[in-house]
Length: 161
Image (tube, rainbow, N blue to C red; front, side):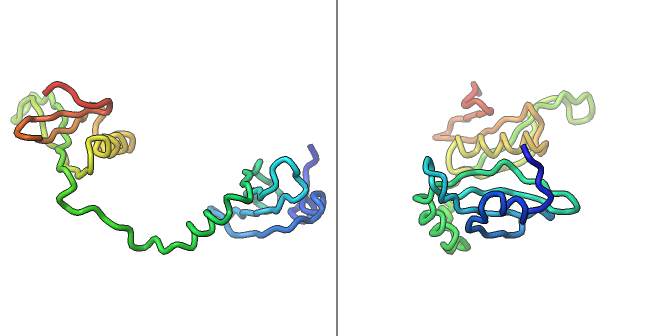
């Protein structure tokens, strides 16, 4: 594979197709190229690249042209005001951990946080994300009351109370 010294040289090797360049993250750039000459899947290919003394380009992602109207509509849609569920639809879950303290508090279950979820599955996802980000300890579980019964959940679902 030939190494190109600049974006201009790379574009020239591709026949100077229709393209657009935008700023990416962390000083990189993103280029979208119209792949008209690709008869198998005509569409766009998106590459990220850097051009700081050396030229590096990613492998690229292809998008079929039939997807573009939906993508354009999504990007142009006003997403600032997303409808929020009513407060009555949320369930309050306690995040519980077991502590083996020999100190003043002793061992037992301790409520370390409260979260609000729409469903058990939603609450388990919040718990999982909290565990993966080290907000909650690995052995934490959820607890809530449903029709007067104590319900406990871990990452895999309901557990005996």
